[in-house]
Image 1 (cartoon, rainbow, N blue to C red):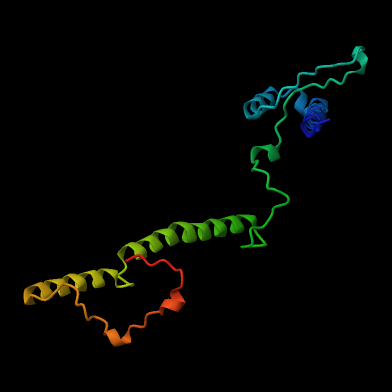
Image 2 (image 1 turned 180 degrees about the vertical axis):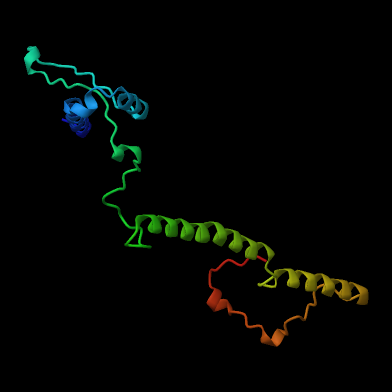
Length: 176
């Protein structure tokens, strides 16, 4: 049977025992003012359908479902998890562990990505690509103004150029 069934069954048993105590007490039996106050403070209890699958009515379990107010039921907090898996930030408190994890994720993912993108977008020309292009345009303008060829044929002296011999090339195809 499911845990929900056992939980409902236990709750019904507690309610019926509490109701029996109230009705058996001689001081509370005729006190209508107390009953009115109890009815105003009653919390809703999950209704029971009492569906039986047995053939005999005597074999079924039926309980009187009358809600009873207890002082404990007034302030009910959300149940804490008994076991939790730590994210590695705090091994003592689950709330502290979750808060630190959220802070670390925010700082690394959000702030880190935004800061990295900002640095990449607005960083200076670290590989000097733009500088080389500017220098090339300046050199072309200077050579045109002096009437020189745009590329000097003697840029590299001929005595420094070493070419392979015909035997080294053999059947290697050279496209000029």
